[in-house]
Image (tube, rainbow over all chains, first blue to last red; front, side, top):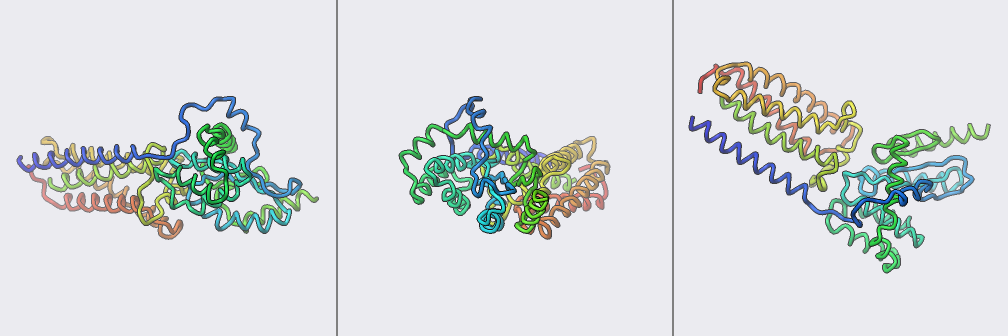
Length: 223
Length: 142
């Protein structure tokens, strides 16, 4: 019976220790925007937002990407696919591309990253901030000092930091980001990266596949 | 009955690891501590869900079942009976087979590794091995 007693003592230590480790892990910090509920009016004002659009407004096909700046797969998609799409399809007028916010709740710094990009966009520097955030993703993902890093990236690309700070402190785009998430969810987006091309949803897709879809839609449109 | 002590301890560790991944999956956990590896790529892949439910949730349910069977098997009324050990073999065998499939996906489909998933695979195989060894032992009262 002494053996059983020893087992239960050890088991109890393991149970309490494991629960403690989990609780500590749950309490680790993250970047924080102004907390509290987002007013419905602020979300509604973002409903008609089409995303950060590049390319010819008259292009026959629109490629919409729902992405999360803290998602490693989105970073890979940016490196392997999106840059090709912009250079070979958007720059040639064959399609336009829209980036829409879809920060996943599992990523602690993602909303702040999307908000930082929105504040940079106010000064016409979304693309540069987008590239900084994805390019430096491994330096800020999951870190409690992420927001100060975003501010540094903004300064590096030439954003006026006084205006940036005011925008971040106010949480000016929280409603629009929430509207983007809800809009994506309504379209069936559940994970990132997700693409909507010609009213169809694709999850993780190669440049060749996107080009084939654009070719097909262009052919249909010209008939 | 030492094998049931071993399976209980291993199941408890497995339960915590699966709980960690589950809490992360529903956004209640901070950043996933992965070190060198691709935990998030694996956890966010399409294979991280089964019937629309995160695979980590099945891990929680599986290890919880193994833990309960192990602890019940250690109660005086069940110590000499082979039933709990047979149940442990069946449950952990199923878990090990599923874990083998997930490890195959990591290696050959996703080509990305999640350390926590590997740890879970090691734990479930260890529980299975301990249960099998227990099955071969003669039932004892101690």
